[in-house]
Each structure stands twice: as structure tokens, then as C-alpha cells.
Length: 349
Image 1 (cartoon, one colour):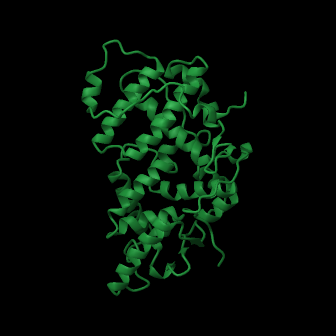
Image 2: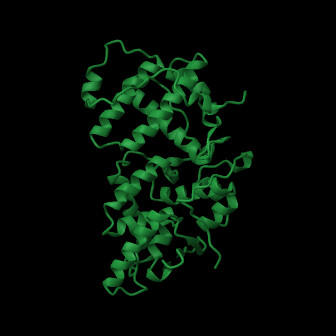
Image 3: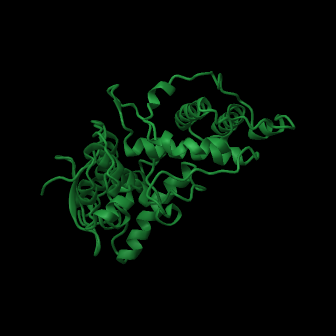
């Protein structure tokens, strides 16, 4: 397989998309020609028009639209250049495109981080899913993750656009437990941790959390991952303290129930955010997707499955790799990616 430099395709070969339309999905579909072209560039114009209608209907965020549109255009241009002019034919280069080099935050040319591969995969699968609604493709590229992964059952990590959308939605629920559940998940807490947490597990002064774990998950001390997470947790701590809440009372879930009921309560809180964010129909997104995104971020920063396992409280490197949809035994060569605004990580006791 030839080495692929994705960067040269980041400048569009032809302007596929101009100003965003304000038509509804019905208007887009009824306005299509009777004989719809299967040329991938023509199909993409219709896909983008449908996504634009979703933005106007508040079913898709503007940011996700912009990110997915850019990736979709690059994929179509990339495959078109090799003579693959339909989406069905373009699948042949899908795997190659996922791993193509691109520019990192500092402008250096490098292999894509795992989070970038996941985002590319989600964007292009969204293209195919939308195109299939008007019979423009019969294919569906695989989700970029471990071979044979059952994302419907286990859940996949959120991607960058989905995380931003969930943060935005959760911010409107700051007066409730929902926002704090999201903040804890993005720091590396699973639903068992969240269900078992109380005020005494949170230290705002040094920016740390004690994740209590469960019978199968190790207790660990982790950093409050970013400014947004710190702000949300501070707001809830202040509110609970003002209400004279006991330091041993549940932070998210009432602690009078069983371990299973507390874990279920945490899962319900995260599911509510996913629902309001518009991700109800994505079978791959689960309450665990928040924690798994934190695991992806840790791997991107250190390229170490050991660090992922420590964050998640897992005693198995294979399980840690599966949690972030990584085939770690394939020997991926990745350069660490630093994000000073969001750094989930385990801290020493």
C-alpha cells in the first residue's frame, strides 16, 4: 500500500459546497431530479443539503456539520482523484484514507491520532448512512475500531464533535446533577464510579478526584481534566455545601440504594444528556462513551495502553484497548498529541 499524505487533500480540488441552504429535508428530497446521479460529488451535495436542513431543525449542531462537511469533502476528493467516482466504489480506499497523514495542532505532518481516526470514521459513515436514505449507496464502511467490535452492545467512545455537543447541552443543566455526571465521565469515571461518589471524593483545591471503583474496578485518583469540568464540578460542590449536604452523601446519586441501583442512576443521567444532544438513534453511543472518550484522550497524549488501563481502573490491557476501540497489538506508530485544555490522567496518591 502506498504511503498517503492526507494533507494535500485538505485543500479542496473543487468547491463542492457553497453557502448553507435553509431548506427542510422534505424540500431537499422532493427537489431532487427523478434520475439521481450516483456521482459521489453530486451525492455529497444532496447529503450536505440534508445535513443543513438538520442544523436548521436543531437535529445537528453547527459545529458537527462544519467538521463532518470538511471531512466528507476531503474523502470524496481523495477517492475521486483515484477514479472512484461513486460512494460504493470509494469504499475501496476508505481504510487507506483513515490512516492518511495530516497536520496536527502545531502544523506538523504526522500519523492521525486515534481520536482523529474515530472522527473521520464517524463522519464518513454518516455520509453513507444519509446517502442510503435516497438510494445513492448500498455500502456502509466499518467503524474504525477493533476488528469484530460490537459497538451496539459495548458502546464506542464519543468523538470530538459529540463531546463538544454534550458539553454544550450539559452546561444548560448546570443546576442539576446531569452536568456533573458528564464532567465526571470526561475525567475518566465510569457509571460505577459516578454512582458511588460523594463530596469527600472531590478536592477542588488541588483539582483531583478519587474514583471509588467497584468490585471489578480499581479505585484511583485522577485529575479534574479541564477548565469546563472544574467549573461544573465547582458549581455543584458549592450548591451541595450551601444546602449543608453531608460529605458522605451521594454526589450524583442517592447513596441509600444498592450498588446496582446507584450505577443505574448514573447511567440514566448520562443517557439523558445523550438524548437531549440528539444521539438517541446512534446505537454506538452509551453512558460508557464519556469515560471511553477520556481513555482515547489519554492514549492520544501518551500512546500508552497502560495509561488507559490505569485511568479506567482496569486490570487488563486488552480490556483497556477494547474500551477505546484500539487494536493495540497491531503496533500502531503514533506521536503523542498534547491538549493543555483537556488532560484526563491518573495522579499519584
